[in-house]
Image (cartoon, rainbow, N blue to C red; front, side, top):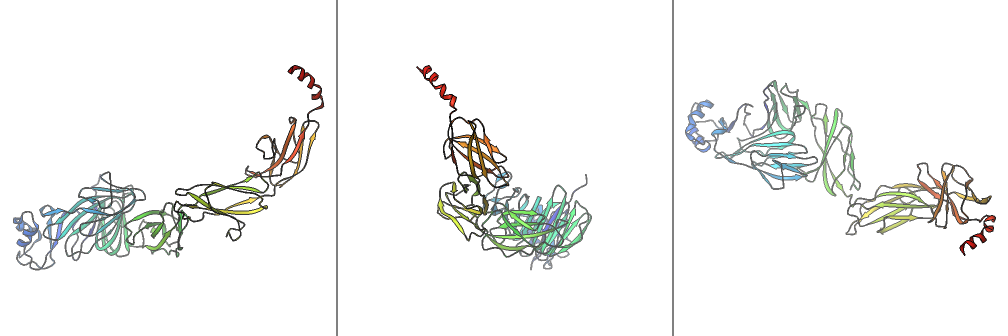
Length: 529
């Protein structure tokens, strides 16, 4: 297997040059009145090694070193002390060496940090720089040291998978911040940059937002000014500099989004193969609470807490490079979530039942029924009910809409849910009921032609004691061999989807006892004696 060179993302402040990928040298920039002996006394574990330092850097006069000269010092020679990082923002689950992380945790050299799905984490390094890891990213803090006597830091991070968005704090000359991922070397002179690595495809990508980047592999090197990016598969030659796609144009957001999922459509970007979007609670996007990626210019977030957020969207080109950001404020006010309404026709003429299931946090509900989708003509309104249904009787045939909102324990109503349309149909009308022969009941009716029907027979007018229910394709229909007695009949329509629909008004019918049964009565009485 070929040797794999690591990807170095090197931030070098001021005139600090970039060390070669196979070196572990720390670059110190000479200051006014520096001498090699004095410098070695401040920086080296063994100050007596100053002649070796002189030879290594080709210094002619150890007592007179030009200001700003680059002096390379092996990291193993340096006097250093630990410089742990701090978790300054955390959203969702993240772990360090398999243990859960929490806000304010200190993370030491050698630790491995990983973020889960829909999680994000921001580290503040000892020099004040920040590194944000979005979801599904893994980062090892390989070297986290303060260079004693120099007032600078030697910070080496290894991105194992996912993404890192870094903002370096400008410092005085000297020091280094490197973010490595396999296969390529990217030397950054700037304060803001992004890098990604996909271990499955072995593809690295770097994007410069401010400053310049030199992306280098064993196959070659390209220079990336601000606003440009490059990607590379393995250790091949990096792609030529590609201008990052422009920021998508986002619509003016509504004053408040009252419905989940939160969906925001925007104008497509020419050349975009995909889009990515993030919701954060801070302007620096260190606390990312929801993340999305898709091929259509329409971001969608299923779970978002109520409150003020910032949305940023980027276009992604065919090479996987992410473009410039568009950012807009978004206010979510969707809780308590409205219940899901259902409806069904009731047996009563022109009747309907609306039903709902309480959402989390709801203790009561408000309900409205109207003739129009804008709810300008409200027919029924309940401002507060603890029931889980509403029965509506006597509605004229026609189309109606209903909506409901949840009320929380503090008495605050949430937003209205989506309007649910329903249709009250003209109920069937019984035109004749007769007893044929001795025990057959014939029922004739008029009803909607686009519905099938069921003829029902019960012992009571409320149809609590249902005795017979018989599908009927056409009118009239015959209920055969009904036991003698006093009954009520009605005809119920059945919708095309099989749901029961409106029912006719009930009519009473008497099924008499056959005459020959009276002849048997004395025999029954004798048997009883």
